[in-house]
Structure formats: structure tokens, C-alpha cells
Image (cartoon, rainbow, N blue to C red):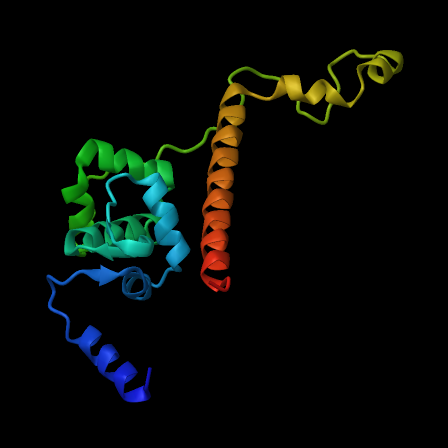
Length: 186
């Protein structure tokens, strides 16, 4: 492709109407996030449904872009977690998050539910042995005793984090596989 052709394509992108569909690279640039983040958000927010064409190319409608802008503002600007944004989408709807994407005031949003790491009952810490335990009992117990002391809420939060990390890994690997397929000689 010549420089003139490349320049005219770029100018055409700048002159797009507000109702035009946007490519993933255009949306990623507008939101200042990498493309893989948009793909990851699609796995977390089923409300994001770009039009997919041949070769898996994504085209985002103006409503999709507004939704992504709202999600980005909530995650990066307001400090919500993915679960918090999912809750807002469930309780207040897509239109509300799109309005946030347009820059409307946050108003009454569902408050972020913090992960409570305090035990429900007083318990020993993971590093301290049970009260009154003698040295012989400690030696028999071994290092695994702390696992039983994990509070159920902490364990749930850890499982959710592990699931999100596994999803991130899956998205990265699928992107890497797609890139390797594109680079392989035909």
C-alpha cells in the first residue's frame, strides 16, 4: 500500500460520521486501552456485542462504544471492580452505563461491595499456631494447618481472582494463537 493510499484511509477514518461503525483499533485508540482489553471485556460483559465479520474482525456500533466508554470510566476513573460494573449493568441497565460513557454525572450508583477480609469470628492468624499448642504437636501438624483457617469470604475472593486470571490467560493465548496463524506462511 502506498503512502498516499494509507494517508487517504487515515483521513477517511477521521471523517467518519458519528453513526459509523468503528474497528477495534479505532475504539482501543479512542479509549486509550489495548485491543486485548476490549476482547477481555467482551468475556466479562455479555452486553458488549460487536459485529464480527470474516476473520473475526470486530466492528463496534456507536452504542457499543458508549457502553465501553462507560465501563472504562467506572473501572479506571471511579475504581469499580469488574464485579461492581457487572452489578451496575444488572441493576441499572446498559442505558445507565452508556449515559456514564457520555459523561453524565454518576448520581446514585450501586455502591461497590468491598471484599471483607476480616474473619467473622476471632481466629488465629495464618502465621500463629493455635493457642496452647506444644512444640511436639506443632511438628506433627506440619505447614498445612493455615489452610483450614482461611475465612470462607477470603477463599471465595481468591477463587474469583484465580478465575479472572485464568480467563486473562485464555484470552492472551487465543490472541497469541490468532497472531501465530496470521504469521504462518500459507
